[in-house]
Image (cartoon, rainbow, N blue to C red; front, top):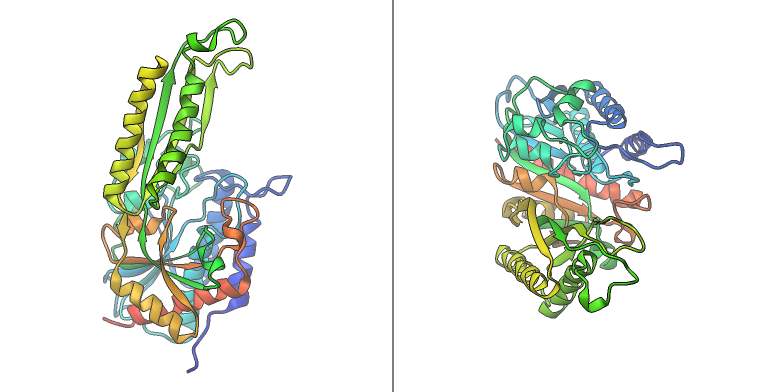
Length: 412
């Protein structure tokens, strides 16, 4: 059976061109949300959307949509594709960008083939998915589904003291459209896996059936600063030691539990931050994830119990601040099955899998059927300049997306 295909050269060229935007003088790629470098990426994306004949819609939170609609289907909920184009610091070129540009490529291919969709098709680039400059992550899609008020999101203060709303206005991407005005009929996000499973199993396509729940906490431990040389170990109130205990506890607890939970202490700083002073304060973050809500809650409770034990044994005080909390997501079974059958029809091995990372798809799943397609990541590396997916895998994923979109958008 023959299949139509996307324009591989055009897709790969777009990925490379966007990947060159935001490089510093050492070649490092950084496009933080609403920054000058992200503006350059947004400008390029909008130019491509317009060149493809799409209607460009920008909402108040800065989400960008390229909309393909006709007189026959205007006003119907759209089949939505996409991801994000903001990056982490010193990033790779595929995370998020691949999903946006593949969505654009699918629309361009269908238009060129004379495909007449029964409903509009839109490609989205959501604001601040990474959450590096503004918290929480996936902010644009969260606003889109009504998970946080637009005004509250626009007032978010970034790591550099700026506010998201003022920065969107400064770079020209504070749109006038109310977030959520573009209603999704369904949402499909194509993404690199960012993990090692597909490569390990020599499987080119992942049909993502669920996504881990995420719990982010900031923990502040206060002790007593004192001289590192004259204070006996048994007489210390050491905030640094207490913080170290948390990381070790989480690793050992999860190893004993034999559960798929993961825990990460991703940031940590001490005060007064001197080599010869016992830390009086430790401020650090804990990232907990599990695809099962009950296990995630149990892990949160176990951490809380360990913090109480540390307070009693180390004589410190502890303050916990919740930064973000997202429940696990189960994606739409029907769309997952369409992904599987589309891959099979092209002779591509496919496996169902769980996403360990957060994605805009988990937000859109609150209001519409949603699912994700994964392609392999070399060595499982992402959020890193070494992030790489083979061109053949990028093209294969986009072709599966093409087939999925044809099936879903071809139905009234």
